[in-house]
Image (spheres, rainbow over the protein chains, first blue to last red):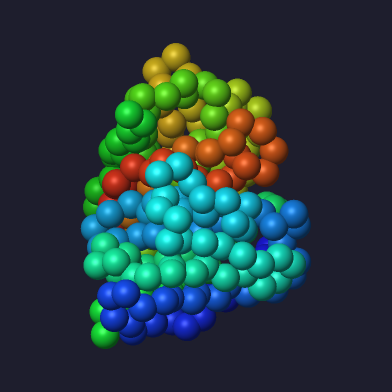
Length: 108
Length: 123
């Protein structure tokens, strides 16, 4: 199975700053079948990005995804207070689908 | 509005069984693949099992293969997970999740999630 490693584990930033989250795969993710999710405490995950760079319905354009092959990035251009959460990447190009360990974006 | 509501979790002894249910509403249930994804306390997400819209294609994580069985009843808009021979490492919040796309790999993107039902395995 494909192992996804996310870095950093924790990102400490202030509102208004830019956040850059990394997701690296143990082998190439076919056709950029890579998704990103946001999870806040006590809530279910929320789909942000699919196909490495396509925003899901209702997701603000400050969220963007990029990358291909084994290296992917989620960028939040200007952090809003509601963006402080844990973010997970997930590959769905091969079975089983697998998740990264998550990056926590916390208020500095 | 799409909604997924899980039930059936609870405290169970190691080696015993439990059956989880997920009631779906707000979308055409029998058009989409459905999945179970779990999250151990304070940990990340782990896909457990998935089932195609018609129940023909089924997959399991290696960690549960041979012990868990996924099923669905399209007439009742419901998804199930029969969990046998439970272990301490199965203790987690179990989410029901809807596959986003209707075909191919997109079925393994999860666009709607339930709040989860907690399974505690302890003697």
